[in-house]
Length: 575
Image 1: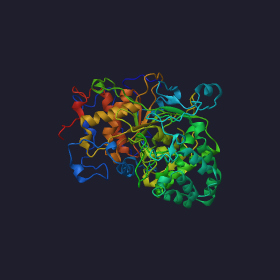
Image 2: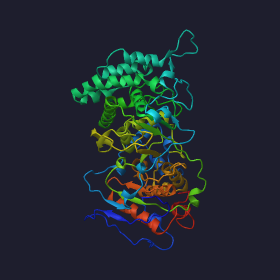
Image 3: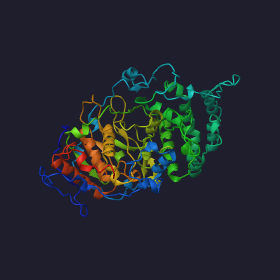
Image 4: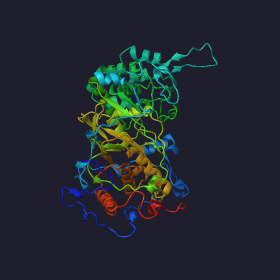
């Protein structure tokens, strides 16, 4: 299907006209549902009084002066609590029948039908692109090791010195990398306790504060044959990857980069062995202090004994079993997008609402060829290296190459926004690794799978009325649009977006309002939207009716009525 932009005219359909499903409420196209000023807010479910976080105090809950609490105002423990929150908005009964309404998603454009090219001076490649194009060989770039550090680079283990004391001239600095090589190459590591000793030998400052209870519990819980296979076969290959860091990653670049899957595996192996200086996070001792980047070393994951964390460790170890047995020969791009300005674009927008489908079954990560939306934490990855196990964290452990983004991505601003290796069931406390997953999707001419994960972070709300204030609405629409828009140089069909209940559940967002916001952002980006409701059939009906209402009445993003966005959903600034 060729994308033409503007108002879509596809027929509303229902997949499998089954008894017991909600009625489709189909109405002839082109006939307005209501005359006069559209009443959008009738679709919203009033949820005033809902507490967004278990850490919120009753006094905070009563305050009307602050419309929202952003994640960067929360400390690490509060953010972790949000990630650990039992999020009913994305639980799904896997036994339910799939219920689908809206436009036919099989006709939506997909990535595989296009050739997405990265461009611009800010994107960097960690390998020689000419050599890859000619011979499909990965030669690290730059050729010579660059140990310089600074705000725009990641501090690498081979660039760091320990035991530095400017006041003691007799105390000679020691290269951290020398200590790491000595610890990891002197003898075979036979169990998790020897692995702990090896990691602590070059992290002496944390010997009394790092705990490995979760790691020990994991290896005690698995079959002895599996444990021996890991320490005798997988771990020795991981050690080789760790020690090849100066060879494979010759400069610690951050921001938007493309690297080989082998380079990503090397970085992840170093995170597993906790080699990155200053990139630590522990419930018992502080966090990362490296220019605002998230923690990257895995020590905080290893200290937690909860069942969900053991399942996350299983996913990560399975990844290493796969790549050490047969290293993938592809590439991965990590791109950070930022809007230069929005001004009054939303209020002046004439963009019409686009094609839309919603379904109660299925999950976002199975939407092959679409932009898969990651309901992100402002600190990318959320609690993936802690106890968190909701949408973002699950997506990251299914595709551990996504965890590399924690190393190179600083906290997301309000104007900003890989291959899969495992199968799973469940969510949060019910999350379970269920086996190997072989990604059969094709690759583009740069060696990348036709798979795109887009991380956008939502605000935290304490009531429904706070979400309707203009400042909050505008911020959320801009954030979604930043993730949904394609670069200006992109010339192909604008392929579909797969999303769901972004910012709902633990963060207090209203599902219908967040659905509308994402419809607006998709309309502005001129891309069709596929919405997964995680088992909520009523939400399927509500969102499709809302989308049809907007399209049947020929409503633009900036013109819900003659007052524009302000006149539809805004509550008085005093509450």
